[in-house]
Image 1 (cartoon, rainbow, N blue to C red):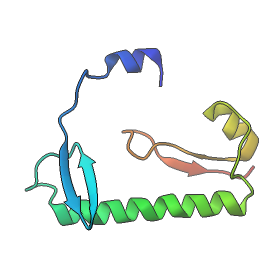
Image 2 (cartoon, helix red, strand yellow):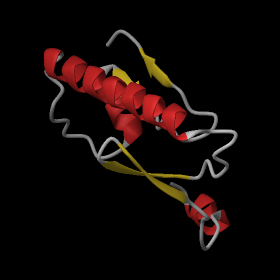
Image 3 (tube, helix red, strand yellow):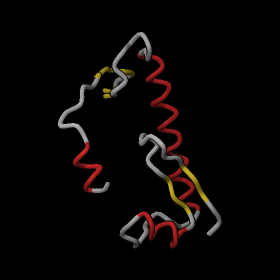
Image 4 (cartoon, rainbow, N blue to C red):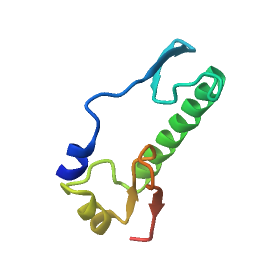
Amino acid sequence: MTVELYQAAPDSLVVRELEVGGRVLVTTLLCPNITPKNALKELYKRRRQVELDIRNLKTTLGMTTLSCKTPEMGETKGGFTVSDPQTPGCSAHHFAG
């Protein structure tokens, strides 16, 4: 995160906290009419599956530990990057290394 982006961030966030299946989820999706509890539960399950898939892929490719210090070096070193799925405008992408 750049200094400018950090400084532009709000001092506080309003969040919605809910318990689903024994887990406490915290989200900025505040309206239960627009995003009901079951929809958030499904979204969490899908996100968790993506995280497991990425972990398995990294293990298969022998990339469980990278020595690079920046995302840019990770791109040049390993040939695989994943951007934060919660950051607007970012997407996961991969390429041959």
